[in-house]
Length: 102
Image 1 (cartoon, rainbow, N blue to C red):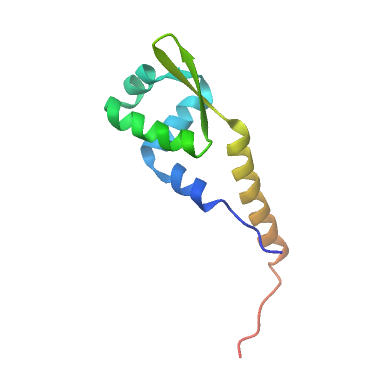
Image 2: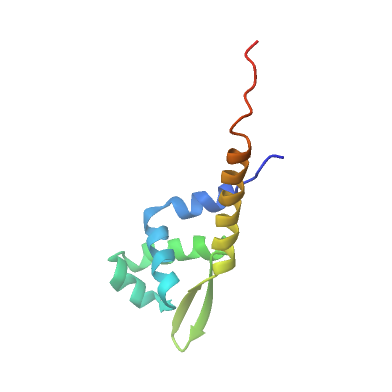
């Protein structure tokens, strides 16, 4: 059985700023202003990264007055972690499998 890992999601999370945003949102729900303060990123840059995370289904938004709060969707991260766990288990089970050279 071939284990599949969501490469699109890995690409989304591979960006250092997006990974920092995800890490911060794992601790608490934050608005854009908080994320600018925490990351030091420019508002426009941060907004672009948040859009990518939203489109990938990693975060969800909650409007609150003139602010938008962002919340991490833990099931997406758990699913990716599960895919890696399956890959590791497959490697453990295949440790003795060795294809003969021609």
